[in-house]
Length: 107
Image 1 (spheres, rainbow, N blue to C red):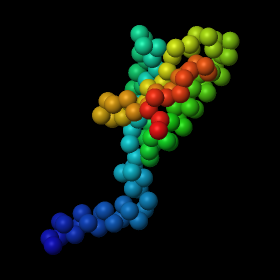
Image 2: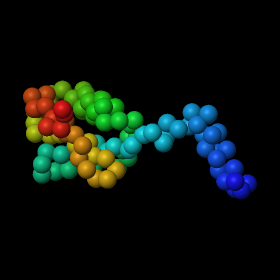
Image 3: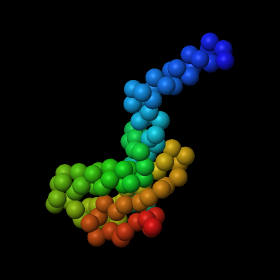
């Protein structure tokens, strides 16, 4: 093993020991709002360890939208949050409107 290889291996071990592997175990998800015609793209995204954590984040977004002005709840009819992975695939869809149907992506 060369000194270079040993140094890289030591860096990897240091990363694992420091707990910095959390970044390696997460995936970035994006939470786009759409009503089918209009789309509001999420330009930042959110790092989550799995789709369940991403769903939880989407529910938090929806709760925040509903809390902003409860009198506008009718304005959200037909709107949904599309959870999109870094490959551009929609992995889940959650309705913003309280009367929205359950996601077709859940098992």
